[in-house]
View 1 (tube, one colour):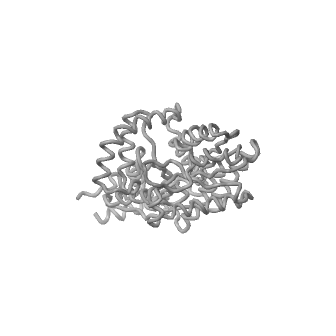
View 2 (cartoon, rainbow, N blue to C red):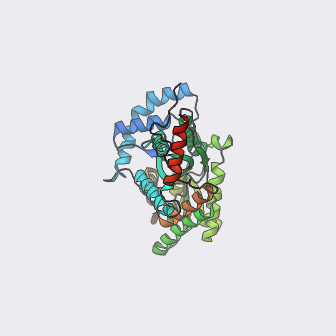
View 3 (cartoon, helix red, strand yellow):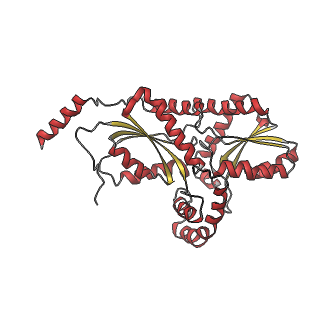
Length: 360
């Protein structure tokens, strides 16, 4: 096997620290061919769909990829902007804001990039760029507050797969979750309170998280527990009683049982229980995307209003809000503790080059 090296390496190249933030991914365009490529990569991940491989490949390529890309393309067209995918736009904005926030301390010695687990820019392509820029210490932050094997662990799998092909590995730190990180809870609370200041408090605050199959929980995945802890901490910070909020799970597909209660079924049932005004916030989504904009704010809004609801508000994700960037910065600074930029002065780099040349 031939391992990838640093093709542009120089002995006088500055050594840098790298920060890589990652998110789930997005198709390159809201078209059927682009969705077919994206869904093929996403749904082929054994972390995402834990079904015997041969059986699943037959289902995926024989049925799902023949039908779902067209329907998904239509959904993406409803949220796509002139500048592209909302998830990509928000993730890039988060990257840029973190660069600016960290620059006063780190200067040019910290390289901040973003990548997608599925689609572009790929984790491998961004890692290659960071290595060529001299990154020797790497902190990876998947923007999933609550850990799940289907998201966080899959990101680590992608890193490990890349590293298994790479000759020179950086020192690595990996943030697996931050579901109970106080600045993150505070950022969520501030977003909710800001919405309340304009629209008042609802009869019920719905905290909707992306779902996973129930058997993932049964097999030991902590995602369900971490979602409920986030909800509890947020409710405590907001001063809500147990009957003023509910934790639900959205975005299920297939016929097996997923984590309950389901968001759509909950919203259909609430008007019949006398709940006429709801607000929905999605604490597990660091950026607004198809699942929040189209699924929650359009599809689930229609379910609630059709069932007799009177007022429905979606509270946007934290995106690149200053409170969110401050929370992420605090988390990053905590994890970077003990790492510091190397001495990249011209004198030191020249001396390193001369010593290397003397050995050649």
